[in-house]
Image (cartoon, rainbow, N blue to C red):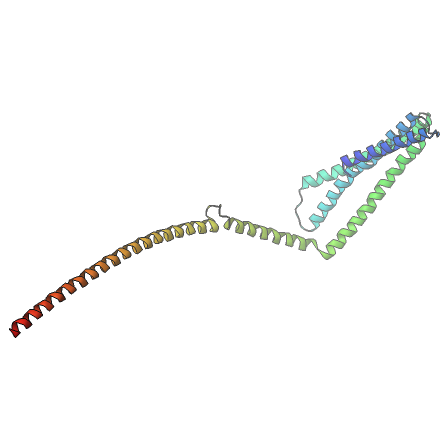
Length: 257
């Protein structure tokens, strides 16, 4: 349970208790003094706080120690400083939680003994009971989690998981290399070189298109010039043929004269 969730739970429970008190007052039922209810709410807050917060820190640090021990058993390197720090945190908060429970029980017993709090004996008993209940609840959760972890390790051994993680890391590295190779914005990548080559080829194609268009125009001009020369040659041949016909007719006339 996070601190925010814990505070939200306290606020909701406090609101419910106050609503219950004022509801009973509205129905004219005997509910006692409001101060007793407020003291009860504060005691409940305190018992809930010492039952949740220090024990949560202790068990979280103990989980770190257990996981580190398992990792060491499988040949993984665990920083010694981190492991020692987690162990010290687990021990300190365990003793802190026990001290808070026992101290709270003693204080509540004294308040009840001197008739300062009417339900002090019950609250003291609850503080002592929670000292045992909370670790028992955590022990059950821990045992259930360990059994689930063992079941998971039977199906997916840690060595296989590490090997799979290594393969996934290798695939991610290969994917990064491929991504860099196909990134057109990456200088020197395959995609960048292909774009550069395509640009050069496009320039060459543009130059060839321009040269082809120029040759086409030149060819058309040469064909038009050749056509004019052919027409001029044909006209010249026609004039020469007429001249030869006239000479032939003159020769024939001379022979007949």
